[in-house]
Image 1: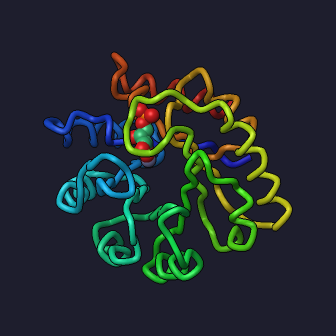
Image 2 (image 1 turned 90 degrees about the vertical axis):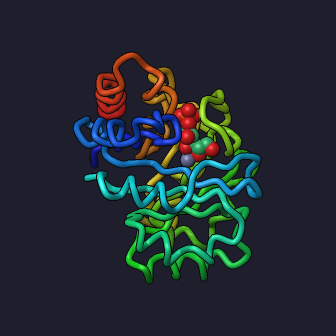
Length: 220
Ligand code: DX5
Ligand code: ZN
């Protein structure tokens, strides 16, 4: 079985010591950098934008997984490719022409991801799943780090896994929000491939060890 991936969320890093925290991820057992871009419209918060991502890309040595929590993401696909994104995830709820958006992301050489809010059923991806490299199941309402995990997520992961198998798709399942050592194993058992963790990693005493622990839990 392919190794399960850990993606620390830079949203919970110390922005005054960003290079230090990027190097911490580089030198850890983490697999991806998870980068949350919020516009204050799609979600009730603004995180950071292009200049910060550019600075992160300069130092990051691992896959850059960008999670766009913005309206009308099509306008910025090319820009995010130029800034070094390897995976670009848009929200289902923000895309009127999702199929077109997915093709545009791939045309820029990135993997195409779709994020689903907690209220969105996985069945809405029935007709696009074969075109999607990654589905990000939101296990909190997007907008903030440090929220508590929504338990219904396990059902959604199982339903999505069934859909992927039934359609013969090659889509990874990512979980985003409230991931800790308490739910990591159960999420992987339900079908998750990538675990995003922000506060759990960066608010811990020893983030490198916390990442190592999550990686081990996800791969037992
Ligand atoms: C929430 C973001 C998450 C967030 C996760 O809107 O998409 O990626 O950084 O943070 P934690 O792990 O603290 O819930
Ligand atoms: Zn995210």
